[in-house]
Every structure is written in structure tokens, then in C-alpha cells.
Image 1: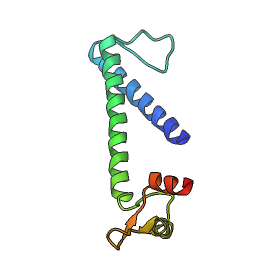
Image 2: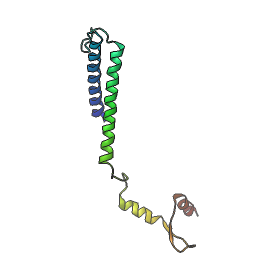
Image 3: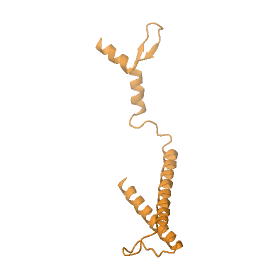
Image 4: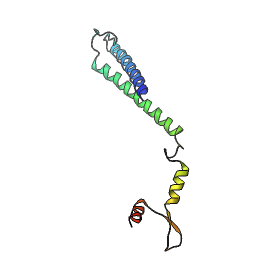
Length: 116
């Protein structure tokens, strides 16, 4: 997470600077983001640079979403093995005297029965 944030920030910063510099040149301003004594970039150029960086961030998010959907599609519940889930479901089954079959007990029913 830390590395991804650092790399993403570095890439979006470079994109914002490059687009701002290109747009400033179109407006006739010689702006170089690497020179601190350079003239200030026009607001329109900076806005386009920031907008390009935000679209890149959005693209990263969409790529991440696609990767999650494709690769984690059939993962199931995390932290619960199928055997443990089956054993827990079996433990919650109780005989139903009215119908002669078994039914599954809810957590609230189990608490009431334990208190009795």
C-alpha cells in the first residue's frame, strides 16, 4: 500500500508537471517546473495538468477494479474454511418435534435455549 501510493503520487506529479508545461507553452508562457525561479504557470495550464493527473488516478482505479473482479471472482468468504462452515451449520440443526424434521436454529434461539 505504501509503495503503491508513493509510486502513484510520483507518476501523477510528473504527468501534472508535463501537461502544465505543455499547456503553458501553448499560452505563450515559458514555464519550467524544475526551476524554482521560473515564472508562475497560468491557472488554465495548471488546471489542465491537475485534471490530467486526476484522470490518470481514475484510470489506475478502474484497472484495479478490473483486476479484482477477474482474479478474485471465485474466492468465496475469507477466513472461514468450508469444513468449519459445514460443521457450524450442522451444529445449529435441531429436531423439530412438530414436523418430525430438522431445522436450523438462529443465534437468538440458541441463546434463549442456553439460558433455559
